Length: 596
Image 1 (tube, one colour):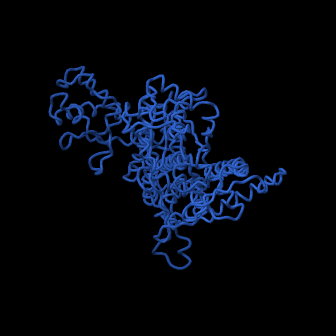
Image 2 (cartoon, one colour; image 1 turned 30 degrees about the vertical axis):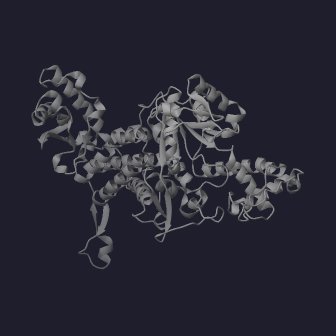
Image 3 (cartoon, helix red, strand yellow; image 1 turned 90 degrees about the horizontal axis):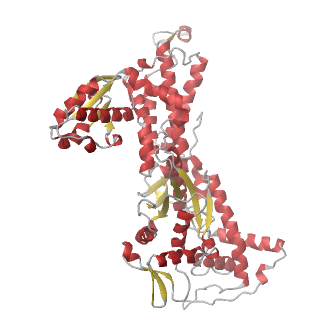
C-alpha cells in the first residue's frame, strides 16, 4: 500500500466518521482534499511503516481532543486490507504498520508501470512556456547560463512527467546596445586594436572576427575595406570604437548568426533541445512592440510625460512607473518585455497558460515591473506569470575558485565545464541544488569515482543493480515463483518504503518547480539500496571456509543463498530500484550506465 493509497483511505475514513455522526462538529465541507492528508515515514521504525497527523489536523474543527479522534481513525484503519496494526502515539499521531505483502506490492507496481511509474497527469491541460538560459548572443554560454540549462531542462522533464505540455524556449537578445558593443569589439579585433572600453573581451572575439573575414572573403566581400567611422577616445584615452558604419553592420549581420549556431550547438551537446528559438528583433520588425503598447494604452495604463511614453505600473503594485519609449524616440528595453509576454500568451501555436521566466540573480529588481505588466494585461501575477531567480555558481578546484576559460577571458563557459567533468556530472551537480541557493562546483570531487561524488554514487547504484541481473541470469534465477511477501527484513522494508515515496516526490517536484528534489530522492534511494545490497542476497555468495587449509580451501565453499521464492522476490526488488533510478536520472538528463 502506497502513501497515496493511505492518504485516500484516511480521507475516506474522515468522511465516514462525519456521515456516521462520530466526528463531533466536523462536517464534510471542512475536510481538506485528500492530498492534504500527509502520510510520512517515521524516523523511528519502531513507530511503524507510516504515520499520519490527520487527527491533529481535524481535531479543532471536530471539537474533539486529537487523541480521541485518532482512536476513531485507528479503529477504522485496523479493519482495512493490507494493514497489520495501528497505534495512536503522542498528542495524536496515527502510526501504521503494513503487512509484508501490502508493503511489497509497490515492487509489482513499479515493474508493471516501468519508466512511467509515478508519472501522472495532474498538470494535464496546461501549456507551460518555460524560458531559460536566454543569454545574449555576444559570447559563449557562461556558467550561470549553464546552471539554467541544467535546471531548466530538468524542470521541463519533471513538469512533463506530471502531465503538463511544456514549451522550452530560448530568447535571443539580438536587438539593442549589447549587439552594438559586440560588433564594435569584433571590428576592433579585426584591425588589431584595443577592445573598446564598453566592449567584449576574450579569445573568442578574435576567433569570430577571423571567421567573419574568411566568410566575407569567400563571398567576394572585403569587409575591412568597407567604410568605417572612428569613434575616437574618452577623456582618459580609452578607445570608444567606431560609430555606425557599413563595416560594423557587416560584422554584425555575419557574426550574430555564428554565435547563434555556437549557442545552439552547446545546448544540443548539453542534451537541451529547445522547442522555440525566439528572436527579440522580431518583436520590432513584426510590429508587436507597438501593438502591445497600444493594448495597454486601450486599458488606460499608458501616459505621456516629459516627451516620453510611460507604463503606469504603479497602478499594479510596482514601486515606480516605467518609461517604454524614451524622449529621443528610442524604445526602452522594457518595451520588448511587454511585447514578449503578450506574444507568449496569445501566439497561434501553443499559447502559454503559464509563462515561466528563469532569470539570473541580477534580475531580482525586475520582478515588480514584470508582475505589474502581467496584471495590466488582465492576467494573474504568480499564476499566469511565474518568475524564478537563480543564484550564482562558483567553480572550485583544490579549494580555490577557478577561471579556466581560454576563449572567454575570466569566466567559465559551458564547454569548459563539460570538458572538465563531462555532461552527466555537469548537469547533475547543477540541478541537484535549489536554484534559490548559490552552488559550488568542485571539479576534483565531480571527476572522482568515489561515494563522495553524488552523481557517481547514484549511477553506481544503477550499475550495481544491472550487475545483480547479470549474476542472477548466470545463476538461473528469474522472477518465477517470486513471493514478494517474503520481502520482510528491515533492509527490504527500507527499500520498499523508498520506492513507495517516488510518486508523491515527483508530483511535489513539479508543483514546487523543484527538480533538485529528484536528485535528493535518488541519493536517498541509492543509499538505501547500497545498504540493502550489503546485507541481503539475490544470488548466493560463495565464501571460502575459514577452517579449510591448502588445496581444500579452493574446493570448499559456503553459499549464503535465500530460498528460491525469496531470491526471486529480491530480484524483482532489485529491478524495481533499477527502474526508478533510471527514470529519475533521465528526468535530470543524466545517463544510467549498466557498468562502471
